[in-house]
Image (cartoon, rainbow, N blue to C red; front, side, top):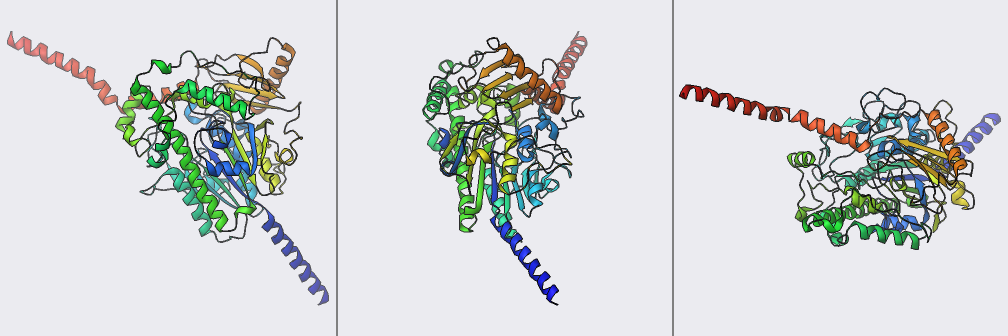
Length: 583
């Protein structure tokens, strides 16, 4: 009897210890913005009012040298697994992949079974796991969130969509699929993406049976992906902010980046690409269109921040905030796609209920888009933007804030998107590299650097490779080699010292041939190890999207397109017949 009592007592003590450990595990909130450049948040120097994000930045650590892939799906795959995108099965976007590559290893465009998500690994130690927003990592029973470790989910399966109703934004993506807990679902009548993602997340908390368990919330916003849309009250404050044009905006952000210490005081900035439009040569109507879209962009950021504030307030009211770590970042740089410069595209947009009415800017049906010139300005002080591995396409903001994170910190240490998962796992006390049956986690935990900024994330001999859609890069210490694909790049390799030249203005590959050779050899080794496949000659990521969209439009309108010559031939035949009768 005494032995039994002792055993029961030991069991109770162990159980109490486990409960105590679970209670002290931090909640994790991962917030992902879509297409946001490094300086878009207010705390990073942007024009939009983002007080809630700024408060998180002030209470934690801001990273100004954080890197992603240049497009969304590969970034998302790395963000939730900690593993290089080629090993996850998402080496490129399905929308950007030429036909014939889909069955190549690593290029299926959906998460494969070689990787686990951070949600799966957190569930193993008792976490409740939720995801809302854009998913774009697969939409079948093996790749939707319920199969990837999420208890509750409300997600958009596509690469993008309208923010007010269930419709697509590209001819090749004319419809948008929404899923609730893995089942197709409809949207509420008053749907607005940023609002509903937060409301759904809160509803998951409210309906949770095991409220004592720690939680992981992944909130993946559509802001600020095209079509850029926001309620009018958020747009109006910015209608005059961007009227001076993209050149002035670039210079303002460039100077602010220097003043904030993001780049050195003597750093240089690349000129605009010669094929870009000149602001001073635009008509007033054209200028109004561009500045209105920029106002909607800032308004969409402010709206997103507003709803993030509602979630923060909810966590405070429920006593959850103080035990929560927040991670805020973006999947890639600003989107320079020319969504409205093509007549076929504009006709498709109009046919599908989109408009460009300034009086209804940002509201239902409005199709806002940056265009390449303003995207390049938003990417300032860096070069290039989304789709390219120039710093403007891959350097995005990162904030880590909350429990046990030192406040008021800023770092310019190089880090990469695969570093988020090992950081989260170390925060919760789980060994990052214990998943021996799966592809390796290729990132490194940021926690040692957060706790002591003198400890680098990557040592001088530790490099990081990157490749998406024929644009490539390799980082080693202060050096970077980079190859940008067409049309803005030339598919040639260059080398820069990012510490002194973050704008990538001076190629030093010939001045330091041995260093260049070292990095090229390191990239080749990386590419071989993860299975990089070069795209066919003449390939362009933007061009592939445009080609597929054009084909879709032509197929959908074939009856009309073919009908015109048939009508002409018919009229000619009728005219000849009538002429013969009359003669």
